[in-house]
Length: 227
Ligand code: ADE
Image 1 (cartoon, rainbow, N blue to C red):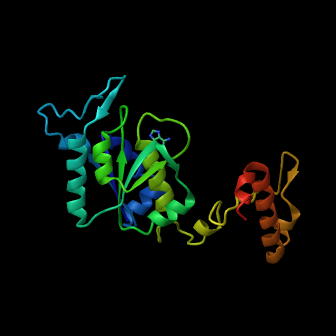
Image 2 (image 1 turned 180 degrees about the vertical axis):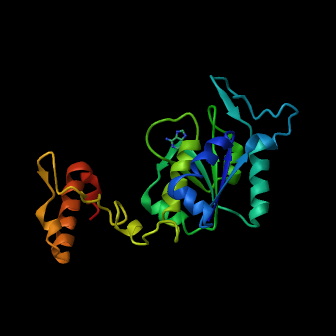
Image 3 (image 1 turned 135 degrees about the horizontal axis):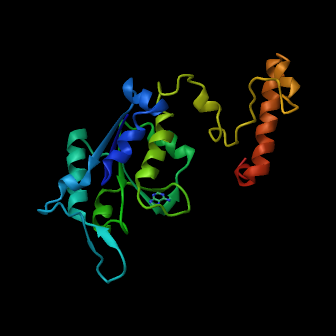
């Protein structure tokens, strides 16, 4: 899967995509992260990409022309119309279900805004999905884009080493994950729940399910409403 990231700060994207699980996935070819600098597409001689907003008000807005030309160039590289996600707090919140759906695409374009946003007219022409990562405002779309790259990549076959782990963890069954323990068996006078040492696989599974439900009820009760 290829992530084409339209940004004014390509260095921010490059760094994270070289380390840990995402870095390994990029190295073995399961994913590719391709930052594209929107500024390179500015038709102005000083490579300007922003201007004042019509109607007044503080702050600058990214102009339509460089954003559109950058997007056109990526689309012609891909060879067909490509899902284009604009990261913005003015949108619904991204979920695990979206991560699974987006992971089915071979190419995805992530558009990162800066300043006060982007001229609405270009958004109308190119954006297929508006996505927020939470109800708070960040200074730009780069961190949200990295959040999407991480969440989507781990749903791409071959990215996680144990092919099961994507299924078991929080949210894919609508529950938070059960508590887990590793050695030593006693730490700060706290024992690991004895059932986990019993070797009885069925009992361990039943205990984990029960704890997952309990944790979900305590921490995110609204997730149980649909169940
Ligand atoms: N850009 C700024 N804040 C954001 C958020 N919360 N989600 C997605 N994109 C953003």
